[in-house]
Structures are given as C-alpha cells and as structure tokens.
Length: 289
Ligand code: SAM
Image (cartoon, rainbow, N blue to C red; front, side):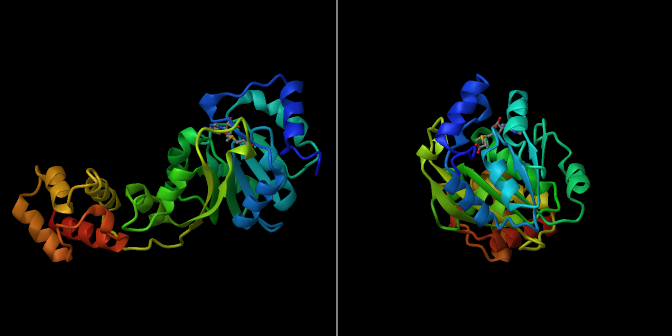
C-alpha cells in the first residue's frame, strides 16, 4: 500500500523525479488518497468481469486501482509529458493501455470495440473540472456501449446534474443528464485528498445509463430548446420565458393554447416541471409546427 501511486510520498517522489509541474489549464489535481480511490471504484461497480475507460490518468493514481480491480483498462491522457511517467508507474500492470489523446477528439467508439470486444465497459475518472460538462455531454450523446459513468467532479456541478424538480440546483443540465442516465451523488471528497488542492469542493457522481429514454419525445432537439428557454430567466414564470423565446413563431394566444392542451399552468416556473411535463409540452408544440 505504501508504494501505491495515490499517496503523498510517492506522488511527491514522482513529481521530483520527472521535474513535473502541474498545468492548471488542464485541470491537473491529482488524487493522493488510496482509500478514496477504492471507494470510487466500489461505487462504480467495477469488477474483474468489467472493462474500464479512464479519462485523464495523470500519473496513474486511479489507473493503478482500476488495473487491480478491473479486467482491462484503457486511459486517454491529453498531456504528453505524462506519458513517460505513466509508462514507469504502470509498468507492474499488463492490463492497461494509455492513449495520448484528447477525449473530445478520440474515436472512443472504435477504440472501445477494438480493445474490449463485447465486454461490459464502465467509465471511471477524476475529471479535469474545466471541461466536465462538455466531456460528459459528449460521452452521453455519442451513444457509446457503456453501462455507467462514475466521475469525480466539482460538487456544485454534481448536485446540478443529479437534482430533482423544485430544488435550487434543478435546471436544464439536470434534465439533459437525466434524459440519458439515472444520476446520483454518491460521495463528497475533501480538498485534502488532492495535490495541489483545488479551489472548489468535489463530489463523485454515478450515472447509470438508461437502455431507453425515460419519456417519449417527438423532436429531441426541440425538447432541449424548450427546456433551455424555460430556464432562461429562473425567477420568471414559464409563460414569460416561453413568450420571450417563441414570440417570432407563436402568438401569446397560441402559447396559452399549447400550455392548456399540455395541461401545464403558465404561472408555474420552469424549475417546478418534471421531465414528463416538459416532454408533454414539447410534443404539443411539435404537433402544431
Ligand atoms: N486521474 C488522475 C488522478 O486522479 O490523480 C488525474 C486527474 S486530473 C483531475 C485530470 C487529468 O485529465 C489530468 O491528467 C489532465 O492532463 C487530463 N486531461 C485534461 N484535459 C483532457 C482531455 N481533453 N482529454 C484527456 N485528458 C485530459
């Protein structure tokens, strides 16, 4: 255990040995607590039957624990300077491959199929916080053959992604994520678990991918446009936000009619609408255009 990468001593040794300096612009906050890593992997449900994809292995702290827990690991790291370090730290493990690629540009679908075949694959990562939402939305909309995503992210963002209607954190991001997954915040993690310590609080979000959409939507693009519009001004009523957004296409009377037909009271706020209500409203719009 002493020799595991995710310890303050080993991490400091590696930083010195390779004269490595953290790049803030790449969200480099490395984990130095092995117990927290094991806990993340436990929540991810990774076993010797599963493959794991990691985004941003850093110096290999989480990668090592994944190599121990999973059948095989495939990791994508954008920072070329980390490649020789990873080669060193991961040399005891023969079930890991590292790709020097930006996860947003990599052909994940193809690499996944080639490397894992038809094995069950889970994504586990301590994400770079500056691009958490683009990375997650990118992975979710690509329809990858993965069963779950378990990621350390900024606590506030994790809360927004997992939020329920009528809560302060509920918004278009909650609906976007929950359209594709069942989301839950499973752990909060103290700043002291990282080197260097981040400025924000962290939490682990677990996303279980849905096999089918939770609501029937005629036009997905419009569904998400309607959701965005409904939250444009949080303190305003749904009626107000919709009038503002759709004034060029629909008169006030038409909008009242649509809300009535969908059974949604225009004096409500967007934050009170559940996903099935947004779906009913969106489908009523779609039927009229
Ligand atoms: N997994 C390591 C750990 O837990 O100690 C490092 C996590 S650190 C928060 C995020 C890592 O993601 C860094 O190693 C960074 O270089 C890498 N990264 C940043 N942007 C990336 C991108 N677009 N694609 C792949 N990796 C990226």
